[in-house]
Image (tube, rainbow, N blue to C red; front, side, top):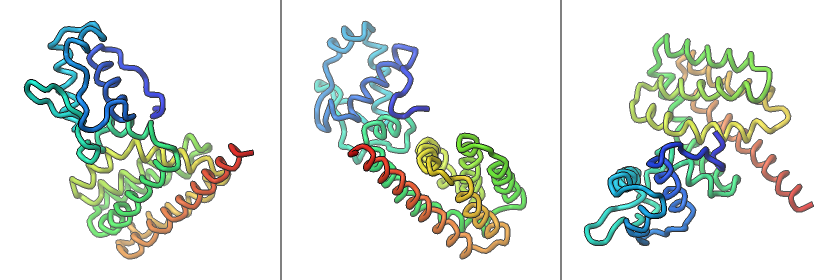
Length: 243
């Protein structure tokens, strides 16, 4: 998925949700501002009020708007949006500079992933460890940066699942899109495969040995290096743009 140019929805209902959601995320409709009146939107999209109201309910469910009697739909403050909703995440990220998005995501990852790795070392079943190992084996077999993406994602999701904490597993699922974009960015590094494998192997080995402290530290090292790799890529891109 290209989060900066999402594919237009095929159904009119989906198109209304997507277009209004993107306009809210981009600031066309600011927090506290009312969306256009129902008759105006119905005319714009050529739909009936029931279709429009169903689309509005979706935006309400995503935390983007609140529907008020005799007022209409009002955009909610940004900190009330459901940022882990895949659509909201796509619409929001699409309006952020690449570097800002990455730094924000890395902060979240550095809070969650080391703790998850430590918990997985304590909580994982033998089957969980086999799944983490299988994902790592597929990472080793990947011959290109593109081929590395899916098993890399599977590796991190398997660790979150191995915590046997439903909330962490849910967060992992919701962050899959953002995580894939993060991995795509670091994969631009010319030595991504050679650099990535030892870092991930250290995490897998620590979890296999049921060593929570080592698992946490290996995850911290992996993320610190991923941030450094990305910063070198982003810095190089900025210099190239100025040249």
